[in-house]
Image: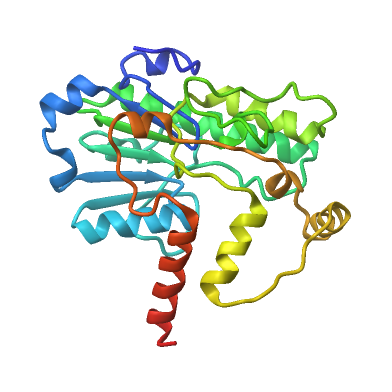
Length: 286
């Protein structure tokens, strides 16, 4: 058992393997012995904070497999799967859904698409730490706890860099870079408060200029207008967000996934962009 730093509630929870873009909390012995061929079986999957874009896509993918999907949500809107209410902080009736589940995925947390004032910073931090602690407590009291716990994270835990690729073993943690905005250090503080290290990222990262060039080529657009730093600052202020979300460079690679033999359908962005654009046109009949 690896200490995840969220208190005694996790002492009996599945062992910790991860963070990065996703923190994978997996007890490998239990997973192998109790769930051989887990990915081919019908599972009960609990998605906490699953009403957002990522949660909806993930829940729909599990539903398409035929899995039983429970979405823990604080809202009353429609969600993919069976909606169960929770507050994202305290144990409640929702905890019974964790008992007997095969997988739990926690995507809960206040959106970082905002201005990093004191109130928003506190909510960003608390919403992540509290939801994780609550799930850990639910797992600890479960008679049949889930074998897999995936905890959403952020690649912003790594240092701002343009050259060196960051994997789980050799990556450089950020927060101490000279002359960076205070908001960048805050993001690192949040990441360190609740993450481990399993990077879910494509194996061939590329600069934004190359990213946009490939997307324009895939869609058939010949040119694009660049955005300068002052344009980003002005736009972020008007949109009430932070330029860190687009200006910080996080060159992250999936070291553990590659070591374990994970195969990407689209390891490079140009071919992924071609596939996305082709699928979009096919759906729209273009």
